[in-house]
Image (cartoon, rainbow, N blue to C red; front, side):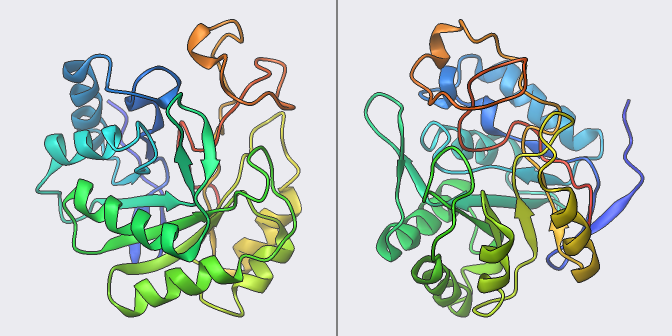
Length: 251
């Protein structure tokens, strides 16, 4: 059985290097109920038993389905389990990905995550930039970060991270609030953040890539047809916001 040994600092937690991204626990296309709840529950239990103490999730997985399952299977949570969520997106009636980027939407999303996970405070909340659903795009994130900072002041969030962002957005965000992690796409075929990773490491900010192993879903899969096309590694020409595997490679 895999037993992680290296640990990194994530907010005020020491977490094992390999975490679990809960995106695929929801139904096909990350939409709708869990297809096989028994098997999904087994995956969660086995991950924690194997030493995973960092789970990356979001209430827009399903929506709500993944967080409800995590609560059902793992609550009350182990003391060392760090649960990280992200906000900034929502789903339409057909499973499409839409921005939910107003301060009001950000606040509502955090409250939904807390309720569905059965928590009083989130360890880390990542702001997922939706200025471009497919890739980082320059633009101000100030209103959204101010909303998260207010929630942090209320004790609903311990730490704030960023997702799908540029180096400039990270620097600008640090003028508003401390940033404990950055979650962008990164893998062998998609390495544009190489320099950024070094910069973040010097600052003690964890880099938590999504799709670190690439994407292995065949492009012809019907459940993915509604997802936005974009440039991806040769294995697949489709991707969607979120993460399949959370994997700390720098802190």
